[in-house]
Amino acid sequence: MTTLRLRGDLWMGTAPLIRDLALDLPASRWSGLLGPSGVGKSTLARLVAGLPGPYRLEGAICPEDGKPLQGRVAMMAQEGQLLPWADCVQNVTIGARLRGVRPDVTRARALLAQVGLKGLERRRPAALSGGQRQRVALARVLMEDCPIVVLDEPFSALDTLTRLAMQDLAASLLQGRTVILITHDPLEAIRLSDQAYLLGPDGAEVLNLPASPVPRDYTAPETLAAQAQMLARLHRVESETCAG
Ligand SMILES: Nc1ncnc2c1ncn2[C@@H]1O[C@H](COP(=O)(O)OP(=O)(O)OP(=O)(O)O)[C@@H](O)[C@H]1O
Image (spheres, rainbow, N blue to C red):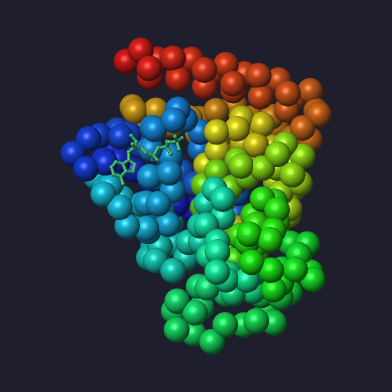
């Protein structure tokens, strides 16, 4: 496990997105990233995951252990991005098949059972609920078994109760990994994050979180107080960004 240090200016084509980024993403901890729409959260997620795009970082992402990031990051996106023609097992094993490696179907089935999908292994995404599809996406992330996991608004399309259940499941199954959670939802950030940053065009600022351990109880007064405080902070930033 390794801490990631990200420093620099994030650009989209010729336009600056975020200047003076300074993020420390500690090993084996969840770091929440919030910010106004369009600030560059998903771009940052793609950058860490090493996905291609018309963006660049003038700076560097430095794993503290000095080893390259390549091959050590798995990503789970909103809506899961499952292959519609493939069943659950095929979706979970897609990484191996793309790499031309024989997929470990036994392990895929075990992971699908772990995320609560035993008996549904042969279903395609269209025959699953939104929550079940995100469970498949989570199993796929676990299948990749990477020490660093980027979650880009993974539960935002789910209803509130399903979202809470998925948060608990992800918190339990991704324990020990370095997780970067991109979310619009202050409650989600507060429930799951060991630390959280608010992103703006001029950099990142650290957000206050309760001292209690994660995943935090959504009914606890300190969780609710932090949620109200974070919502107010986000609202101010959103207004400033629109006015600017
Ligand atoms: N492929 C692309 N080509 C050009 N511009 C892009 C591309 N992808 C994103 N952008 C622009 O870059 C900016 C940052 O986009 P990004 O998706 O990272 O924002 P975000 O903070 O994740 O937004 P949201 O919260 O609405 O999902 C936006 O202005 C967006 O229009």
